[in-house]
View: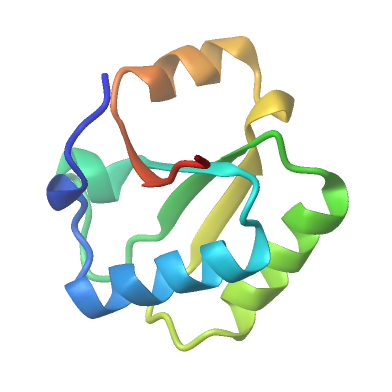
Amino acid sequence: MQKPIEQLILKPKHLAQLQQIVAETIPMCDVWAYGSRLNGNCHEGSDLDLALHNSDMDSYLHLKQRLQDSTLPMLVDVHQWEKLPESFQQNILQNYTIIQKIK
């Protein structure tokens, strides 16, 4: 079930930075956030989990590198949706928010 992005536990400036990096790096991919920063089970050191839809390997690797090189104060764990096991996809579908939606 899609959740409002306001439920994502991330400071507004970090969300804006994340969205800018995503838009500049993979403008043609839908990007979802899921996991502990959305379900409220996070702590200060929790990572941010992202799933990329319809990304090729080069775009995926480029985004991972851009996020690693960024000043975001958390680890960002990036996955290609199509490579995740179906059972994990079903789990994500229960609790996610949209970081970027292609038009």
